[in-house]
Length: 248
Image (tube, helix red, strand yellow):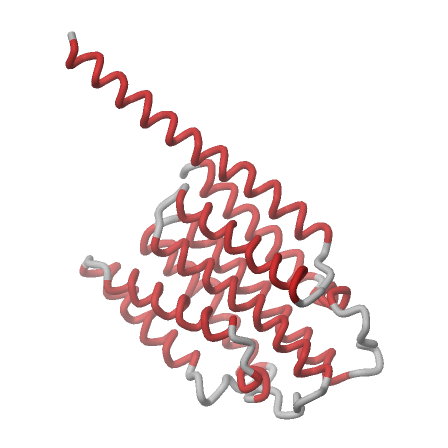
């Protein structure tokens, strides 16, 4: 694995585990809300925090590369999340967006690719995660209200769900980037997506982001960028070497 891939895997694993262990950390992003008193906003925040933790960890699995990474992402992380959310905790997936059904179809195609070859699994995974990602980036109220019917207009529950839903959106776009591009390009585009998403939340939405998240993203991006530059320099050196051989 390239340095960029290893770095991205570690970044996603650390961020995912940290958020899963302490999902209440997302409360700090909404200092104006008293989550101790607003139980509905608290329920939405914790549910989205857990989804974010699982999805970013699943994104890290893609750094392993190829269809194996997609299988680990789906079977190892995403489907266990569905089991906990929908079967154990009873949170219904949005009926207008059959997320689970689409994931099942994509899993079948990924397994088919593993057995028969081709690229059906790759591009179906890319389209699913990219499509759902762009949808969540719109912050549509329905995305929050379908699983949480109490998140009506003007409530803290809806506001929290929309903002954390946006975060889910850019994590899913990261999945698409990691699927479309090999390392180190994939991790680079994914980390740029992180900064774009954080920038929007911080500058446009005025949502205070955790310092640890910013530091982790900055350090990871620096290492990934270094690997990109090193690869480019290596290719240039190899090209110059070939030219020298031809001149001789």
